[in-house]
Image (cartoon, rainbow, N blue to C red; front, side):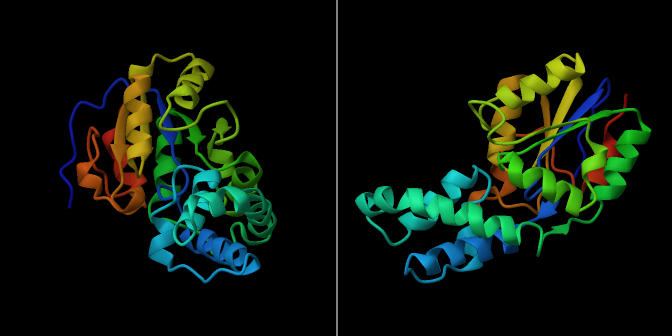
Length: 229
C-alpha cells in the first residue's frame, strides 16, 4: 500500500508513458534482442538484463545489449546492422507477448469520465507505438500520441511533454505525467508538470522510491482517483 499524496486538484491533462506504465512489454523486447544477438553470432541475454535497458528508446536498448560483451569498437561497427535487425524482428514480435497492467483500462476510462485530456508519450518509435496501442486496445483513449522519433529530442528532455501542453492549450502545472522511471520524472520536472510514478515498471533496475516524484500510485486507476479537476 502506498500513501497517496494530496493536492492534485486543478489538473486538466494527463500524459501517460507506455512501456512499464501501461504495458508489460519486456517479453517482446527480450525476444527481439535475443533474435538480434543470435543473428550476430552472440549469446542470449537474460530477461532482467534486457529490462534494465528499457525506457531510453530503441537505440539505447540495442546499443546497451551489445555493450554487454563487446568492445566499444565492436559495438560501433555492429550497431547499424543490429538496428536494422531490431527493426525487422520487432515488427514481427511487437505486441505478441505484451500485456496490459491491471487497472490501466479502468484508470483511463475514469480519467476520460472526469473530462481529463489524455496523451501517450513514449520513447518507443512511432512505427511500433501506434500498432501496439491498437493491438492492446489503448489507442482510442488518447487525443495525442508522441514517440521517441516524433521530435529531435525525447525523454528525459521535456520537449514531448511541452508539446502536449501546447496541443491541449494547458499550462504545465495543469498537467500530470504518469510513468515508471527516472526518465519520466526528469522530463516532467523540466517541463513544469506534476509527476506520479508506478512501482511495477522497469526504471533501469533502480528502486522507484529513489525517483523524484509527487507520489507513487499502485495503478492508473489509483491515479485517476487521486486526480480531480
